[in-house]
Structure formats: C-alpha cells, structure tokens
Amino acid sequence: MENEKTNRVGSVIFSEYERGEAVKKAAEMSREDILGEIKISSLKGRGGAGFPTSTKWMLTAAAKSDEKYVICNADEGEPGTFKDRVLLLEYPKLVFEGMVVAGKTIGAKVGFLYLRGEYEYMLKSLHDYLSEMKQDQLLGKSICGKEGFDFDIQIRLGSGAYICGEETALIESLEGQRGEARNRPPFPVSTGYKNKPTTVNNVETLAAVSQIVTKGGEWYKTYGTNKSSGSKLFSVSGDCKKPGVYELPWGTKISELLKLVEAEKTKAVQVGGASGVCFPKSQFERTLAYEDISTGGSIIIFNESRDMVKVLKNFMEFFVEESCGQCTPCRIGNVKLLEGVEMIEDKTFTFNYINKLKELGKTMQVSSKCGLGQSSPNSFLSILENFSEEIFNGRNGGKHEK
Ligand SMILES: Cc1cc2nc3c(=O)[nH]c(=O)nc-3n(C[C@H](O)[C@H](O)[C@H](O)COP(=O)(O)O)c2cc1C
Image (cartoon, rainbow, N blue to C red; front, side):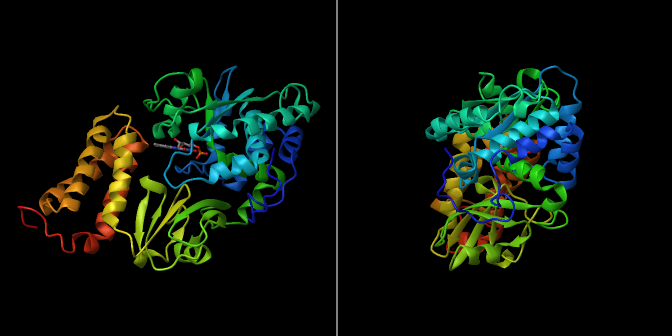
C-alpha cells in the first residue's frame, strides 16, 4: 500500500496527483495525442543518458511487430542513488500508471518492472498495489472499460549486478541470460526483450509521464530551464545535516543545493554517483541541468575532513568488482586505475605513470563497449584533476621525476 504518511514537497513529481488520473486521461486520448504531450514536455530520460522520451516511444511505436514491451528500469545500482526506491515505496501510482501510459502509446500489452535485488522487501507491497489497480480497472484487460486497452505488469528481481542497470544487459538478464551489454545497434526500440521492440525507461521518467499526461506538456515545461524542462529528483547523501531525496527544478546551482541540505565546510561534490564527476568548491556556482552538469541525480557531499584518495579508491574498487569482464578496456582498465590509486596511497607512484593512467582513462571512455567502462574513469580523471594539490601534497612519488 502507498505510504499515506508521506508528505513530500515538490513542484512536479511530488505535486498533487490523484490515483488513476493518468490512466483515465490516457484512456480517452489517442496514442498520437499522448505522444504529442510527451513531445511538448521535452521530457528526457532520467536514468542518466537523457535520451528524449518521445523519440524513444515514437521509434518503438513505429516498429512493426505484434509483440512489444515496456520495461521500467528499477535496478538503481549507482552508488549514492536512492530516489527510485522512494518513488516505488511512496508513489507507486505514478510509476505503474506511467508504464500503462507507455504501453498504450507504443502498443505493448506487457510491462516488466525490473527491480533491484536488494529491494526484494518491496515485492509484497508492490504486488498488492498492482492487485488494487486491477480491481479498479487501471490495469489488466479492458482498462477503464475500453475494449482493447489491455496491459499487465510483471515484477522481476535482479540479482545485485550493477551492469544489469544498463538497458541491454538488463534485457539479457530478464531473458535468463548472464547480464552483459549487447552490441548496439540494433537498439531495444526495434530489437529488445525477446528481440521485440521494447522501450526501457527509468522509474522517475515514468513517474514524470503520469504528471505530464495529467497536467499537460506545456505545464511541465514551465519548470526548469529552456534546455532542461521539468524537475529532477536528487538523492543527496554524505556530509550534510539533511540527506534525502529532493525534487528541485533543473537549473539549481550546486551551492543552492548545499545550502538546502545544510552542508558545511564542503570540499567536494560528486555528481552522478561513482560514475559521475567530482566538483571542487571553485565550481559550486555551476548548475545542475543538461546544458551544464547533466546527471541521473546522485549527489555525494564530502567535507574538509575527507581524504580524496580514499574516496577515489572506494569508487575504483566498486568498478573493479562490477565490471562484467566482457570487454578489455573495462575489465583491465579499472584494475589498472585502482592500482594507480593504491600507488598514490602508498607513495610508490611516479608522475609519469599517473599521466599514462590518465591517458588510459580517456581511452576507456571512448573504447569500452558500454556505459560502465565509458563512465568509470570519470571520477579518477576528475578527482586527480580537481584535487591534485591535496592528493600530491607531501606525496612526491617514486623513482621517476615529474
Ligand atoms: C552500468 C550502467 C548502469 C545503469 N543503471 C541504470 C539504472 O539503475 N537505472 C536506470 O534507469 N538506468 C540505468 N542505466 C541507463 C540505462 O542503460 C538506460 O539508459 C535507461 O534505463 C533508459 O531510461 P530513460 O530513457 O528513462 O533514462 C545504466 C547504464 C549503465 C551503463
């Protein structure tokens, strides 16, 4: 059941919403009209990549097949990210109704919620919620009494692999295979689950869809900036007095967010989780928006007491553990970057070698097969670039000179 005690404040996702509103509205709209509203809203995917939702849906809708699928990506494996957990626990109506709307728009009858293995404890409440939706004709056969408006949702559990958040690895996992990224193209919009056209969307994207269908694309666009419409949920953790999930308009400055969560003596802000970028104080006036700092929404705050070498080591250990091993740049590269961090820690590095590792990181960004290896060097490169004074102060390196 929905948590009635929740009273979150926010202009878009957390704004007022009556259960069933989006499905009832969508039942009266044509697929083209729904797509039109999503297009007007300029909604971009909230899973991190920021791909326009209307384009993804349009391509899946246009693909010729009698079987299509909607997948809600609730793997939420990025360190420091927990906004999707809040949506599923407290606002399942927004997420599931967004899936129903997606189903009608692309022509799918079945949707999967791919749920992070660690969220197994939510299964009962989510299944209960789906049963209630069925009783209320918001799910199942002839939704809202409309013949042919059929859509059902199944929940599948992941098994704790970060790679399974990558949409093609997720599809492999859903099919019962080992979670490894597929070659792209073809893309899931034409060749997804069981090689059928499939739209994969993040939990927050689908929650936004419910609000957009109900209140309109123009309304949605009144929030945010010209290039980044609407709001964003941020999972804020680390050194601050008020960690948690915040809904803020795109265009919010890092400094404004730090004030809101009562962070003091902040030295560094990691935006986008372990695979994101670490910003120093000199960049706290930059804005969180697609046109400046684009992010899936994880904010980890470090105050002056933190050792940035230890922070970086922690991130790199995560990637060594989570690389699926399929492609060489990611499998070997992350190990080499971690070894470099350990050399810095032990003061056995040479500047010459660290510079080579920076080149390796840049090579991984362009040569890894999927987003995991393409983004895992981000923290290595940004922390060494932005915190070099702290990191190399008192650490003069090993045998070779600078
Ligand atoms: C290693 C890796 C992990 C990912 N994990 C997630 C995740 O947990 N949730 C998510 O929505 N997207 C994740 N993504 C992005 C997905 O591949 C995909 O872009 C997203 O689900 C599409 O939904 P959207 O268009 O609504 O953003 C991940 C990508 C990579 C490379």
